Length: 571
Image 1 (spheres, helix red, strand yellow):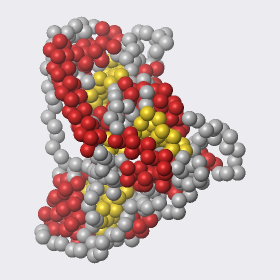
Image 2: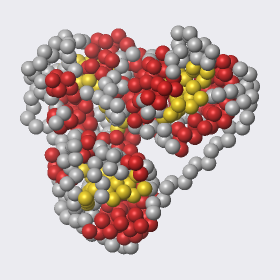
Image 3: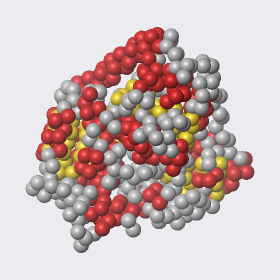
Image 4: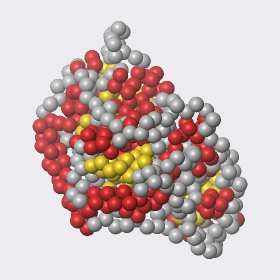
């Protein structure tokens, strides 16, 4: 269990969040009043339209191409965070959308501004994050402009939707169309704003908010088939993904009636936190006990879950009959064999299946208590000057307050915080891993922190990813976010060491030991170097203090020889 923070620290964080919220509301009202009369250009009109539609937050790096549209958003009360890199801005927005269920917007310069952001756009697109990106574009006639690239092709190449403001007369309709696709189709949409169109006089029009579509209700025959499958199952397991995050109560009720155990994909971690029948994360991060129970199921139902190789351990957890519930029929069988596919909203489907059972209940897989399904550290393999990453993670779990949002970067280390740091619910874990790029974790934590200011943000990073995304540490400090940044520092790209093996020349992926705590202090953080469990007392001191600046923990970890989850991934 997570240890409670001091009451003084908790109260200070709560008061700070409330005060910042009041300041933001007042500033937004003042800017909205100032912005009512400034609709001179199409760029102004696009910003005003998005503000009227209700975008929640803006992120970006401002250049000449997006200066006016960004100013229009800010003038109408949309909060804006100036990032230090376009990729960081986009990842912040992605995380904000995941943790708030509200639509953010990113603003970018043309050409290089867009290309700098492409990794973040790819991550969001692969994750089906509802996100709207505004990017300037060179005029059609500017064929020799330095900034000119085929932006539409670049956007489509990474799986995002490319939209465009075609003319001043169509600007409102074009903007609403992009907004609608982002929100209602859950897509990452990039709206191109050619500079000549931006500068043209505005042609105002009504920004009619599209009618929100009703959730898709499943076909009655499909509901009956799934109900029959659950009646016949004696060891059912539900695996819920991000598409089920709105349906926890409905899934709990159906699981209770059918005796199903509850698990999640990594991105939905925390959805069933506190439930005595929760197995935690299914797949590579699963404890041996969790993996064994899922593998022994006679029916696995994926609810809004891709059932990809990470969630199923390359299919090893799916010896049973497999059913899948999803809004997109193309999801069925995309990653694994599926015996029954049900098209429908997860919550609607779970409720309809429960009704179809007509009072039928069974013990199913709930015949005895689960026992301990969380990871517990084995023998401590710490040395005199390096700490075992499992011991580090377990100790941090005990020290940090339960009200936390954990954001995890990619890399060899990432299984440790994912498996050992508990989270309070589905808004306690942010996992931008669809593209498997390192360097996104710090920006992820920043976006999550802005979405959930009521919780302690915790960024779990490897040393490679931390240094790759270190520019946004200045943003964390500038915004005064009381974040705990934990760097699992093995002075290497650990995944590559494991991938290529100890017999290879690893000089290209190993590095001299670096004083990362001192780097953090240079940015304005409190710095702490951890080599032993006793060094973690510094975390307690920071938690008990004013938390007036972020804490950067440079944890010098032992070489794990390739983490357990990575061995499975490379199998």
